Image 1 (tube, rainbow, N blue to C red):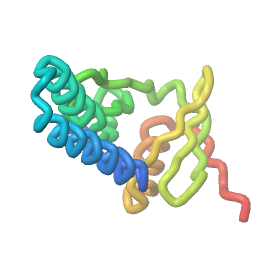
Image 2: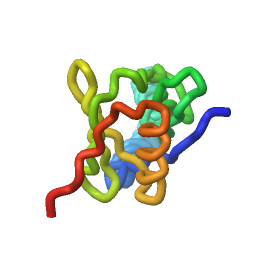
Image 3: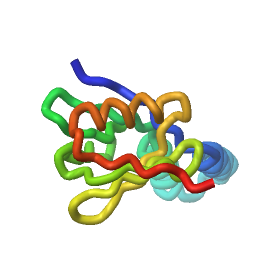
Image 4: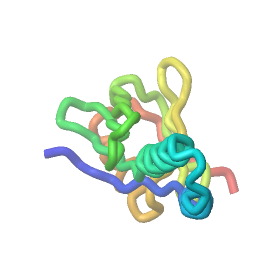
Length: 137
Protein backbone atom coordinates (compact mmCIF):
# COMPACT_ATOMS: atom_id res chain seq x y z
CA UNK A 1 0.00 0.00 0.00
CA UNK A 2 1.44 3.36 -1.04
CA UNK A 3 1.53 6.14 1.55
CA UNK A 4 0.32 9.51 0.23
CA UNK A 5 1.17 12.95 1.56
CA UNK A 6 -0.32 16.24 0.42
CA UNK A 7 1.82 18.86 -1.26
CA UNK A 8 1.58 22.41 -0.01
CA UNK A 9 2.61 24.99 -2.59
CA UNK A 10 1.66 27.94 -0.45
CA UNK A 11 0.72 31.27 -1.92
CA UNK A 12 2.08 30.41 -5.38
CA UNK A 13 -1.20 28.64 -6.22
CA UNK A 14 -3.09 31.89 -5.63
CA UNK A 15 -0.80 33.77 -8.02
CA UNK A 16 -1.18 31.11 -10.73
CA UNK A 17 -4.96 31.17 -10.28
CA UNK A 18 -5.06 34.96 -10.54
CA UNK A 19 -2.96 34.88 -13.70
CA UNK A 20 -5.24 32.25 -15.25
CA UNK A 21 -8.33 34.35 -14.44
CA UNK A 22 -6.72 37.43 -15.98
CA UNK A 23 -5.96 35.44 -19.14
CA UNK A 24 -9.55 34.19 -19.35
CA UNK A 25 -10.93 37.72 -18.88
CA UNK A 26 -8.63 38.99 -21.65
CA UNK A 27 -9.88 36.25 -23.96
CA UNK A 28 -13.55 36.95 -23.22
CA UNK A 29 -12.96 40.64 -23.93
CA UNK A 30 -11.19 39.78 -27.19
CA UNK A 31 -14.08 37.55 -28.28
CA UNK A 32 -16.16 40.70 -28.84
CA UNK A 33 -13.64 41.69 -31.50
CA UNK A 34 -14.20 38.83 -33.96
CA UNK A 35 -11.89 40.22 -36.64
CA UNK A 36 -9.26 37.54 -36.07
CA UNK A 37 -10.97 34.32 -35.01
CA UNK A 38 -7.79 32.20 -35.22
CA UNK A 39 -5.97 34.41 -32.73
CA UNK A 40 -8.90 34.09 -30.33
CA UNK A 41 -8.88 30.29 -30.68
CA UNK A 42 -5.12 30.24 -30.10
CA UNK A 43 -5.42 32.44 -26.97
CA UNK A 44 -8.27 30.31 -25.59
CA UNK A 45 -6.37 27.05 -26.20
CA UNK A 46 -3.22 28.45 -24.58
CA UNK A 47 -5.15 29.56 -21.50
CA UNK A 48 -6.84 26.19 -21.03
CA UNK A 49 -3.49 24.39 -21.43
CA UNK A 50 -1.90 26.83 -18.97
CA UNK A 51 -4.58 26.21 -16.36
CA UNK A 52 -4.32 22.44 -16.73
CA UNK A 53 -0.51 22.42 -16.59
CA UNK A 54 -0.34 24.16 -13.19
CA UNK A 55 -1.75 21.40 -11.05
CA UNK A 56 -1.69 20.27 -7.46
CA UNK A 57 0.95 17.75 -6.43
CA UNK A 58 1.08 14.93 -3.94
CA UNK A 59 4.01 12.89 -2.66
CA UNK A 60 3.71 9.12 -2.55
CA UNK A 61 6.14 6.72 -0.88
CA UNK A 62 5.70 3.53 -2.85
CA UNK A 63 6.20 -0.09 -1.82
CA UNK A 64 9.23 -0.17 -4.13
CA UNK A 65 10.95 2.45 -1.92
CA UNK A 66 10.57 5.48 -4.15
CA UNK A 67 9.21 8.92 -3.38
CA UNK A 68 7.01 9.81 -6.34
CA UNK A 69 5.99 13.38 -7.00
CA UNK A 70 2.60 12.90 -8.62
CA UNK A 71 0.52 15.52 -10.38
CA UNK A 72 -3.23 15.32 -10.00
CA UNK A 73 -3.77 16.48 -13.59
CA UNK A 74 -0.94 15.22 -15.78
CA UNK A 75 -1.01 17.16 -19.01
CA UNK A 76 2.65 17.97 -19.56
CA UNK A 77 3.99 16.78 -16.24
CA UNK A 78 5.79 13.52 -15.70
CA UNK A 79 5.88 11.87 -12.29
CA UNK A 80 9.32 12.22 -10.73
CA UNK A 81 10.78 9.35 -8.70
CA UNK A 82 13.40 9.73 -5.96
CA UNK A 83 14.91 6.47 -4.64
CA UNK A 84 14.69 6.25 -0.85
CA UNK A 85 18.08 4.48 -0.81
CA UNK A 86 19.74 7.60 -2.29
CA UNK A 87 18.62 9.84 0.59
CA UNK A 88 21.43 10.81 2.97
CA UNK A 89 19.79 13.45 5.14
CA UNK A 90 16.53 15.26 5.82
CA UNK A 91 16.13 18.75 7.22
CA UNK A 92 13.03 20.85 7.88
CA UNK A 93 13.68 24.24 6.32
CA UNK A 94 10.39 26.00 6.93
CA UNK A 95 7.05 24.94 8.33
CA UNK A 96 6.12 23.42 4.96
CA UNK A 97 9.50 22.61 3.37
CA UNK A 98 11.76 19.59 3.65
CA UNK A 99 15.24 19.53 2.18
CA UNK A 100 16.24 16.01 1.14
CA UNK A 101 19.98 15.55 0.62
CA UNK A 102 20.64 12.89 -2.00
CA UNK A 103 23.77 11.10 -3.15
CA UNK A 104 23.86 13.55 -6.07
CA UNK A 105 22.36 16.91 -5.16
CA UNK A 106 19.27 17.70 -3.15
CA UNK A 107 15.51 18.16 -3.50
CA UNK A 108 13.20 20.57 -1.71
CA UNK A 109 9.68 19.28 -1.16
CA UNK A 110 6.79 21.45 -0.04
CA UNK A 111 4.64 19.21 2.10
CA UNK A 112 1.53 20.03 4.10
CA UNK A 113 2.71 21.04 7.61
CA UNK A 114 0.59 18.31 9.20
CA UNK A 115 2.28 15.63 7.05
CA UNK A 116 5.94 16.60 7.51
CA UNK A 117 6.66 14.58 10.66
CA UNK A 118 4.83 11.52 9.32
CA UNK A 119 6.79 11.71 6.07
CA UNK A 120 10.13 12.00 7.89
CA UNK A 121 9.22 9.05 10.13
CA UNK A 122 8.18 6.94 7.14
CA UNK A 123 11.41 7.72 5.26
CA UNK A 124 13.66 6.97 8.25
CA UNK A 125 11.81 3.70 8.83
CA UNK A 126 12.44 2.71 5.22
CA UNK A 127 16.11 3.77 5.27
CA UNK A 128 17.68 3.85 8.77
CA UNK A 129 20.90 5.44 7.39
CA UNK A 130 19.08 8.75 6.82
CA UNK A 131 20.32 11.45 9.18
CA UNK A 132 17.65 13.83 10.40
CA UNK A 133 19.30 17.21 10.79
CA UNK A 134 17.79 19.21 13.63
CA UNK A 135 16.68 22.78 13.08
CA UNK A 136 18.89 25.51 14.44
CA UNK A 137 16.72 28.06 16.24
